[in-house]
Amino acid sequence: MEFSSASSHHSLKRRREEGGIDYDGDAYPAPPHAPPYSNGNDSTDVDLSLLEAVEKSQNAVEVLDLKTLKKLVLSFERRLRDNIEARLKYPDQPEKFADSEVELHEELEKLKVLAGGPELYPELVNLNTIPSILGLLNHDNTDIAIDVVSLLQDLTDEDVLEDNDEPARILVDCLVENNALELLVQNLFRLNEADPDEMAAVYNTLATIENLIEVKPAVAEIVCEKTKLMRWLLGKIKVREFDGNKLYASEILAILLQNSMANQKRLGQMNGVDVVLQAVAMYKSKDPKSSEEEEMLENLFDCLCCLLMPLENKERFVKAEGVELMIIIMKQKKLAYGSAIRALDFAMTKYPPACERFVDVLGLKTAFAAFMGKIPVSKKQKKERYQEELEERIISIIASLFGGILRGSRRERLLSKFVENECEKIDRLMEFYVRYSDRVKAESERLDQLDLDDLEMDEEEVYNLKLESGLYILQLIAVILGHLWSSEHPRMRARIELLLKQHKLTKRNIKDILQEYHDNIGDIDGPEEKERVQVKILKFIEAF
Image 1 (cartoon, rainbow, N blue to C red):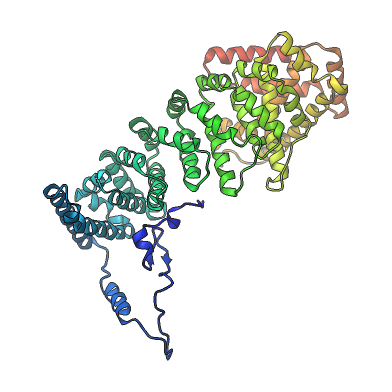
Image 2 (cartoon, helix red, strand yellow):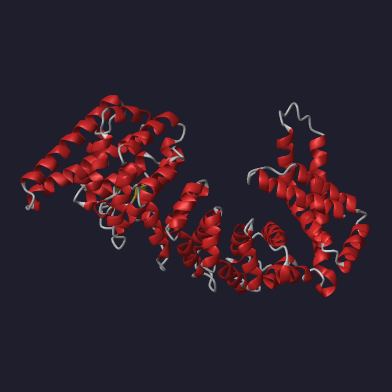
């Protein structure tokens, strides 16, 4: 993943002034005025002092082992002590402790070599150096804190920790135990992104937190519980101007929300639903200007969909007029069209108030246009699968509408959609039914040919494979057909029977799908909800 303001673009100013190695370990060139090297018999003058420096630096390379580690740590601790003493002795005379600060900076730079030997991390932890390093995140000189952030990002880099699971775990546990998360986030709040170095430090801070989560997933909840990181991230995504750090902030927020109901609820309580809606509202009538900005918008919708998992956040979404905003985005037919459908699907699933609001604000017309295949597709979107995914979302939304609106004028308006234009919506529904029925049949035949005992697959795993192949959508379609049939509308029933006959199907086929659905309803929402749904499905089966 590339970011326009990634650390490689914003290395420390003092390091940009000389050729060397950037934060990602890649060589970057010396400035234009640096004299060229001579080659063979080239008569170009050679800067001997530069060659001498190169030779010295090559001689200084040591094997990275325990002895080198102890030497680096001892040298760092000495410089740290010198700096503390100088600042205590001359608190109001910066010139008296400036040299010790430069030396401390150099020692922190030297420690970066440890990223080349992650197997030594347990020894680094045993030497009790981590608390000393982390303490510098509170240093009065922001440049020193920036050095520490850069060091931590290097030590925890995903490529460095790959295939070093145990050393990585030991280091990350030590960092968390010594308040690395709290200190990193405190420092984050004092960084000024107008300064390129501090902007890079913001990126490196977010990268370090992501690295810690990668090694220890529990960090995702710990960092939200113990720090104000979510507050900072919300502040960042509210800013109108786009930059690489805003992109990264949106990604980190999505990671924090992804698998954590606690974080979803916590952000909801912090007015997070409203803030994320405001952030996506910037794109209701305009498209992002770059691929990075597109990625950020996608991340923001990922955040929104995660936020819409807890019931209380669905309520906040409706109160903040999220339903209306999503319909406006759909009507504008910009890049966020598909993401708006996805958010509505999350909001309306098992939440009748959102379904009622959707009908009240004239969402049916927009939704059924998509249902009939009128989905705007740009060249950037993979046409076939993109369109199919949205059709599946729309089918889910229609199923939610039937499940959430049981009576009254709203129900009548919903049912009337399937009668208008000579029942074209029923024709389309049966088209979907046949498509997904064929897929499920093909998957069932494939599974029947496998030796499931050899594959060690139980009935539940086989059922899940069928759901993934299209059975889930087929069940939703069967449920919608159940609602239509149970309405006892003569034109609807006649149309369904005609279409079944045309496709050489019978009502028994639909009843079999509904029966399988009935038999496999789980109790994730509690035994009472399971029983309620099963009773409803049985009524559909009996009605056919």
